[in-house]
Image 1: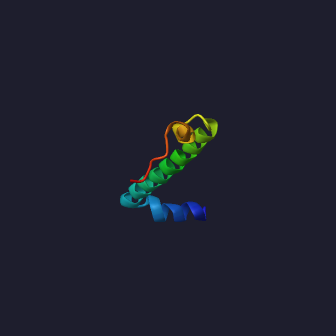
Image 2 (image 1 turned 135 degrees about the vertical axis):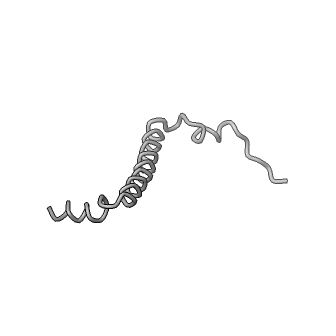
Image 3 (image 1 turned 90 degrees about the vertical axis):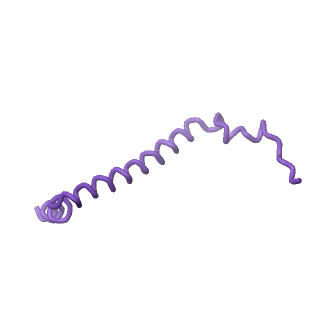
Amino acid sequence: MSLATSLYNSVFRRNSTFVASIFASAFVLDSVMDISFQKFWDSQNAGKQWKDIRHQYVEAEDDE
């Protein structure tokens, strides 16, 4: 019960801190989900993406 009480007093009691905590957690969750799905996509499509096969089609650029 102590954890619930301290959570209520620190986050949920004031509307401004409640809204700020929602925005912060949404930002963090969005970043975590984006990174996770990007890594999953890259692992499932390894060797099929442009970043993996670019060297086969683009010649090395000469310095002028």
